[in-house]
Picture 1 (cartoon, helix red, strand yellow):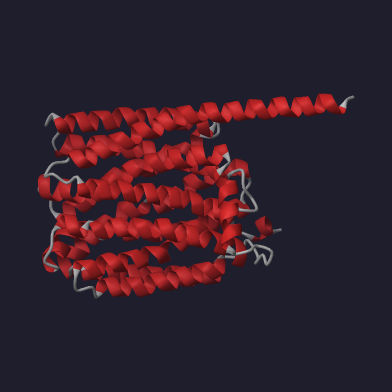
Picture 2 (cartoon, one colour; picture 1 turned 180 degrees about the horizontal axis):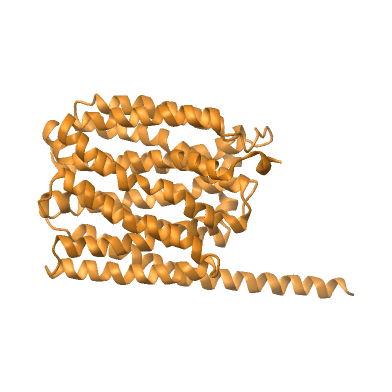
Length: 415
């Protein structure tokens, strides 16, 4: 019934806008790090903690919204989340100290993650399990526009009007998305009064999701691979603006150019899914990412890379992420229908938690070189690949074990 009433292309656009609020909030103010640090009388490393606090807020917030989406449907929690985001964005624009900005970024993240969790849950509500990976690839086309546009726009806003304007624009954008989803987004999952919000029940639901091998293996594989992306996001303002001496505007274009690889790969992924399975695509992409990460780190350590070669390697690294993210996400939530909200929240929470650790690690290891960023990118890709290859054996073993059990039960039933 619902599928006939919903224009899926338009739905993906709306979900993309909801999902893009978080990435826009991350990417748009990156070119302003030096200006914010100067204005608030602190260092770029201190201001980068506002990025880490944002990741922490998204991580915690997703665990909160998951049960709410399963209990109250998809739209009501979205109203709460976007309202909180708008208020926090106004506060960020008025922040007078670095610590105030860091705290308000945490609150801003708690609001923004509502759209991220809900969009994934709605995809599971509407689309068949076999379609999810393709839908995530299309969704990434909308989401990936943020790193293409946001830093460029942010660079110009900071250069011409000051960094406060970035948060004014984010406030306006969130208000537009609020109105759009209110009138255009249908309720895909009605309230479920049977769904309890008792802590014991919530923990039980999360435990059920987490204990599923297909979920935890692919969720962690995708999350750790994505942590390499967050290491780049956290470290790139310092690497390009401070070390390579590019301007805020040039940094915006560099960031946008690197993001093109992510966008292109996510769309090629949709085509590849016609002939190959998600696990096959992930394996090839993750090996390529490991090789690229190793070359990037080794080249940095030996002083062999300049700004151009660094950009090329980062472009390839992010392109690999365009294949890894949609497929690991699809495989993670595919087994769930009833607990789609909880599965989406847990997957997102894992991703952002590991992303926050990666981001903070890059800031903590800051030593005046690009090694913290490139080292973390290489480490994340290698760890992700190792987990995937080991985890695939676990999934195959569990599948064979289930087949043996079913065969044994079948044989017993004959007697």
